[in-house]
Image (cartoon, rainbow, N blue to C red):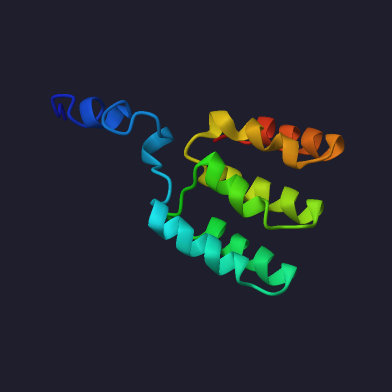
Length: 123
């Protein structure tokens, strides 16, 4: 039963190589993110942009930095859609501690809503 600690320390403690990223969540590589951003930007209608971003946030294995999420949210005009996407993106964020940097994209009531959502979410 004893595995010598190899599976519960060392490489699995999250503090090696990519220690700044929560639980091995490295954000999407720059070139890949640029392609996504350009694809969303190229959509003519807002609802298509929203759909594309939802798909990106729902794709298993896609992780984003708060800064990447910010760039995506800034392409969305409707604050209600932005809020929904921000909440959806939260579980994909590699640097959840920085997530409050998005609050300036929202009115006070939606900031409060996002804050409630984050406090209620177990990362």
